[in-house]
Image (cartoon, rainbow, N blue to C red; front, side):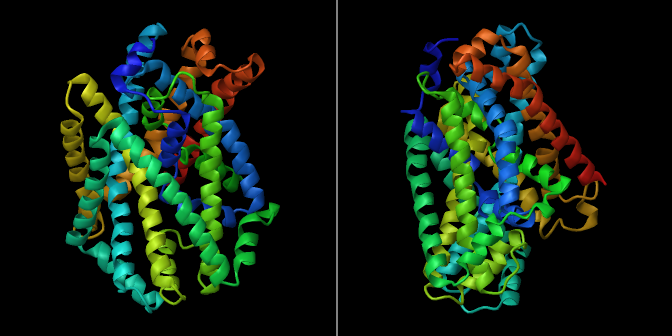
Length: 457
């Protein structure tokens, strides 16, 4: 599988474009509120240390494995897994890994788009002044009114899917490459501006820093270790075909090891800086840091509404959240579009339009989950459409995909092929192989079983 296949799908201009694209895929809504919150909840700096160990043992080895599969295959994830299975004299069943990853990304985008639509709605509401001076109860009522209104949710869901489709339809260079070159630096700049605002306008930066980084080993329970392992896996967008698709566009000269480590570091730094920017604002307004999504859509809008310059910085904050969501959403649909253009010789415009419309349609189930279909009569296994999609993708498809990718790269692919792709020293290659063959799969299996048990119990 040589470089002649590179031309069929195209390649990134350089290693840094892959880094920005993969970091964009990894940096999403969860980085802005989930990681800072679980860090504070599970022991601050002590949790960060455990998380970094989990990134090293689980996240980085599997991300390297998925990138190897993508770059060696040089096709969409579905075709890549079929071709690599044939090259490795393995069963055709391995191609299902590609199908499952593409389907997982597809289903995740259907509800991710609706949630991202909330951020767009709040960007507009903050800019128009509708949220200024409101109490927490009033902002909460405003948010409840948004999710209870299927027409509003549909409008913002549609806007977000159109933005995603516009990027994808323009192709690898004009679309993906140009967008991440703008979105990611802008995201970093907005984050630094918000951090500066948090330092200058609140007197709680020290408390926010302490919340995130004070070492409280008493909070490092087994549950905390599981949370660290789970987040180390999920935060890097593993098991959904995105990294495999992006790896297919990666130049042969780029080092997979150092590139993946850079992505992991960027992802972690963004999450921590987001926490340093957000929590001083939360503490300064006497609010609860553990509010989950409510932190984004109730606590922070309330805080911005009562702070000097709050309207401007509130808009910047929700633009940041929307950009983070957009950088992730384009990676969720790209594997499906790449497959359709390859398999049926479709133009990217036709493939993008077709799949975006299908994702939009499935997303309407999530829109209605918060209002028209929220009753028990519309639930399956006691879950709304949104809850069911979230459960199946997060608890079954992604861990299973990551587990199978690690096993395939570690046990099924020919050692000489993987060694050549990774281009590591023998000692480092053997370390990666041990992690990929044993440690990472065991950890992902533990996450898989623990999440299923927690969800079912």
